[in-house]
Length: 254
Image (cartoon, rainbow, N blue to C red; front, side, top):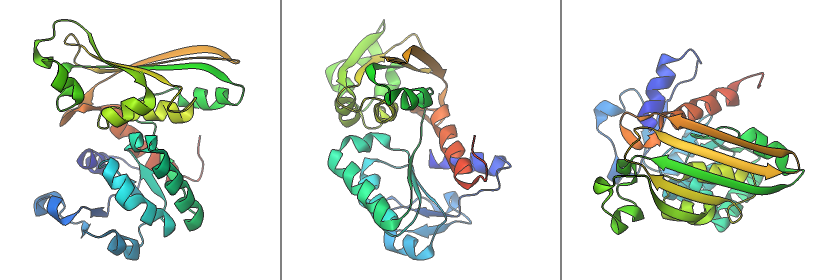
């Protein structure tokens, strides 16, 4: 995703570019992949460099290990691994760190839309929020679903998970960031119902959100093309990061 973001920013006319990368030494990429970029292995060195904005697009562990330090030192940060916020202790730590550093933590919308409706309707009361994620079987490789069934032999859409958003984010951390985004915008992790499906008949990543409340009801459904290099991630998720960056530096936000 980081490579996709860098390439997309270079193609755009946003006037924003990736200037540095923070990667633990044991995961350092080849020099050819980071040519022209500052490379940091220690978050303290990145803090001393004083970036204008940091974008996390690595993992739940990266949020836990690096983002609190960035926030406490007054560095605005965007996180992509939204599912990490299912950890209530981490969520609280990040909120405190942002207040201490007088900076902002932004959570990207990822591969879903309609979150503005959920946020607006929440104040009047939401009685139900449900999320359904449908991806091709290959997108669920390396997840608990692969331990319970032969994904390659599926002949019809198959439910691989049913539960709430907190459980989904913890069990499927690399696939369920949309789940977390919906939960944060609406009724929270424990009250948001989730169903995840593997569908051999689709080549896209499907997302559906249904909500009911005092405002009325709504349903939104998206069919997203996956990133060419990562079928677990929707292309729209990568684009949402770019949009969050552009909005961060814009004088007028709509």
